[in-house]
Image 1 (cartoon, rainbow over the protein chains, first blue to last red):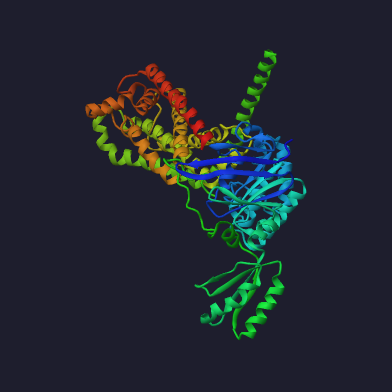
Image 2: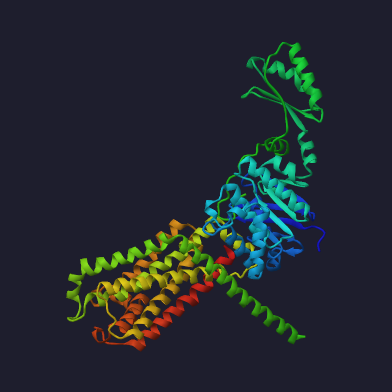
Length: 333
Length: 276
């Protein structure tokens, strides 16, 4: 058994002249949740597709659960599970039929496949809908069914490619609970997402990926320290006094800060001194007679992280275009 | 030592073969369920060839009769062509189905599973062949209703229908390749018709080829669809066969074409599937 459940070294993948991955190194420890955070087109899905044997890397190498993703692709497929943002379930089959089919394709004997399917649907509260075709399912149910399918084989390593994208808030929280539960049972999980709060809540370690490169790696706290912790955001009522307000508050934080001339918003990184700096800011602005439209402490967003790490906003990277007529798959993320 | 290795290989090969069959069967069942739950798929692809029958028999039939030898009813000449055409048209569903599975991400799921690499394709082509069989049988009912008769006896007639079915099966592999390379339902549908057209229509399927210009006759003579349809006629027209019976020649030519298509398209499709 390898020390690391997932290890990649200098992974590279290009589609024509678009370099989707430009040397990605990852290390994921057993029984942890690893978050791969980045905007669309950053290379998240390409990474997952390589790690789940759907795509061969051009260069570099990757091991999952001790298996080389290219050389040992066949045995590797026995120990991984994949649930994707496309929710790959057959909508013409019932929930039960879907999971049974996947169980059979893991080469479980028919009675065992059925037993596991019933059990797993029950666990994810899909029993009542087990005999309905998947096309009647809501988005959240479909995603849970997709997850069930990825779990019938009892994988050691589970890959969740944007498991909550497009879900309503309640389904999102349900999905988070499920992920935590799976981790506590010892499953290693690699999760991709565009949402900082998601990896913040779930991931033991996070890698931020941008245009095919890991630009930062660490725990959620470590990453937020690089952004400067929380941010104090102020909007003044009278736009002409933005400069004046900035003069009062910019010096309060440990350093940095920005004035957005378009929105009239002044932001100051406050580290872990949020409440104290907020109080002081209110006091000073009040003394200067500057009326406020809004004042708030907010957690750094993915945009703030990207700003801090790359100096550019987390915009969707240009979709890689493959040359020739090879189709659309394998290019997201 | 080497004996052990050989033995292990044999076990491995045996296991692979067993999985190829059982995984293929799991997916065949899955695809058959789709046909049952979405009957419109079958209904509409059956209505079209029925309309062809009505068009040819009642609209063109009167005029066509003039090109046929006296005593040969057009419907008996036409239906072998229609059976083969029905099988080939129905086979396009393989490409459409695969493109749909690719688009929905189902193929990704299958490819991440430890299942046989051939199963998605064998399950698809087998289930689609069952649908083809269903349509061929339905077409037989329609054929009898418009006056088609088996003039060479029932066993030969059954062999003819089995032949049409195997033509359909061979074409499912051609369309499997189209589905995997084009990856879009619309593109597959458009390409299928273009692919089918020179085979089905530039053949002896609907009219005797001797009315064609020379260049077209040269194509029609080597066109596998002509050969299959002529074989079908050998097996159903009996004494009415205008070209005389060349059953043995036609049979081996038909079989050769059938095998040639499989030998070319099965490995190509499986290879493309592995890399898709």
